Image 1: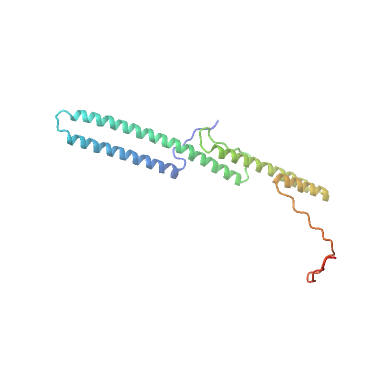
Image 2: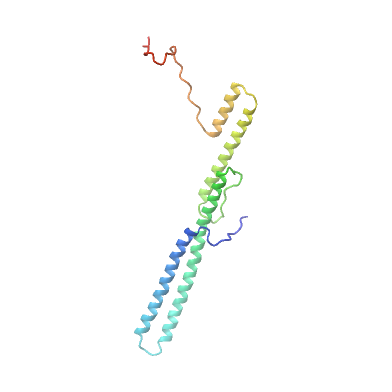
Length: 187
C-alpha cells in the first residue's frame, strides 16, 4: 500500500503556473463582481432596493468564492497527479542509472503516466535480465575455457544482449599479396 502524499506542491514550477492562472481567474471574478455591484447601485435610485442588490451581490460573491475554492482544489489535485507521477518516474530513472534495478517502478493508482511507468518497469526488467546473463557469462569466463566453450559463452552473451553475431571473415581464394604489389588478375 502506498502512502498518501505529504506535500501540497510536488513540482513547484509546474503546479504554481496553474495556481497562478487560478488566482487570476479568482481575482478577475471578484473584480467583475465589485464592478457589477457599483454599477447596479449607482443606477438604482429607487429607495429600498439597496438591500436587495446587496443580497444579490452577496449571493453572487459567495458563489464566486466557493467556485474559486473548488477550482483551486481541482487544480491542485490534477497537477498533483501529473507532478507526483513525474517525480516518481524521475526517481526511478535515477535509481536505474545507479544500477539499482531491484525496486519496481510504481505509481499511485490515480496518477497519470501509468503507461510510461509500465514501459519503464519493462525496461528495468530487461536490464536486470541482461545484467544477470552478463554475470553468468563472466562467471563462466573465470575458469579456464576451451575455444568451443568461449564461443558458446559469447553466443549466450550476444543472445542475452540481443546483439547480432559478427560477420564471418571472407575466405580468399588466392595467396595473400604484399601491401604495395599490383593486383594479380584472376585466371
